[in-house]
Image 1: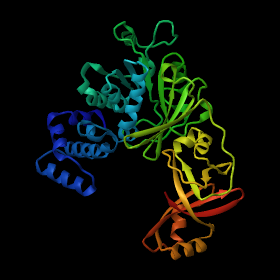
Image 2 (image 1 turned 90 degrees about the horizontal axis):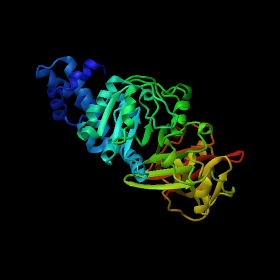
Image 3 (image 1 turned 90 degrees about the vertical axis):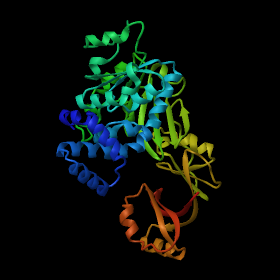
Image 4 (image 1 turned 180 degrees about the horizontal axis):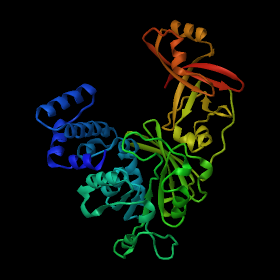
Length: 416
């Protein structure tokens, strides 16, 4: 998207057309919409912009629910935006810490800023891309003066407070520090992909914008939340922040580093597990020691990815009275079932050699035609392995391919 397309979208006629098209969830539906708009005499540029936006709104419902119906997106902006349910947790932490005003530096299309404003916080949102900043301004418009959007670099709009040593190259930043509107916290989402509105690529941590060194220096002076990818190098995490890994409906979606008043006392590692509207959390003052290794029991437990990333597997294992299958593999085992939001559990049927012929014979005997395949510690392509099994039948099961010690095993199990 360029400014010309954006200007087309921001006309009453285009916005009305997007609303009228409604949900477009398939290529066929998009083709019908194109034909309809062309028949009405609209230009190719108008049709492309409107139909493309209607499709993005349809996809955006997965992250923003009904709010997507009045938002505008770029493809890259939607892909990189925080899910509204996760953003609401960020806003909740800000409120719990007594924050009233947040500078959202690197706001993208405004996903987190929407949650901040919706929680009653005043927001100053900044993005370096002119089109993206304009979309954020449109998306935040319902909040009026409580949500200001600026086009510029995070470094030029970072708040500074007397004596904190944080400088700003922008004269306008001083307006954030007047007694009536002091910025009390920063939300920072460094750009981790190349610039663009559609096709982008990941960049190394050394090329984040703004840089991590700058972000960490800011966080040392002002209460800050820094959103990073969940696979971020743990060795670079400052020792004085709380590191919180977040999973949503089974996917680990982010790592957030919280500093100052936003970091909870005594917490340096946290795993937040969200399932729909429910959330559960494990916390610890540091990485926890793994549980003892034990023989395979009647059940296998797979910790949630956020628990694994936070290195809180040991605490989870002890809460389940379970042990490790292998000191280097993130599977737990016990003789008793477990009901935990932090792990998926499987009842062991039998242990087989990791041989497709032997496994296929066992599956055929049990009439298993639907098979979930999991792997850890073995070099196997599950899709290719599945093709060797000749699955038939109406029953279902889970096959866990795992290395235990120096041997590979196939554990046939049922998801509990």
